Image 1 (cartoon, rainbow, N blue to C red):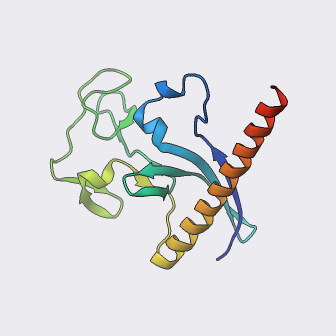
Image 2: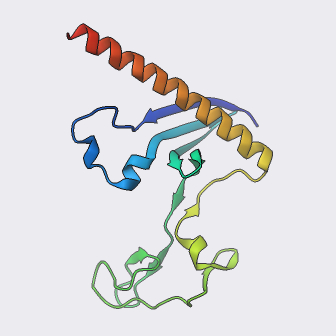
Amino acid sequence: MEITEVRVAVREPMGRPGAEELRSGERRLKAYVTLTFDHCFVVRNIKIIDGKNGLFVAMPSHKPKVPCGQCHFKNDAGGRFCSQCGGALAAPPRDVVGGPSGAEPAEAQAHRDIAHPITAEFRQYLQEKVLEAYEAERARSSRHHAENASAHS
């Protein structure tokens, strides 16, 4: 499988007013990426995050939902009360939360990948292509900002 297109939307503040007011998680999120595979399959909402050991690629994910026992509204797993009616939600067992693949540790349930590489080789290939495109887009954006700044002075 070949990555045939990488689109990067850089999210860095780059000197924007109010950039210092961003929350910690917002400062760590550097870009959103859309990948096209073999000109026929698209994966959106891939994130580039600045982690403790440098940049890494986070695959699209979602928070698992649990229904309220009273109104059946779907709430984020781990919540204590329903966001719709305020009723108490049933607490999952302390050490295990059930998932489609059986019992999984509760920590692993904070977010579940929607799509992800299965092999280490493909993960490495994907990460290299995404980070190369990110660096190229940052360089292009920096040049663009520098050209605009010099044109306005």
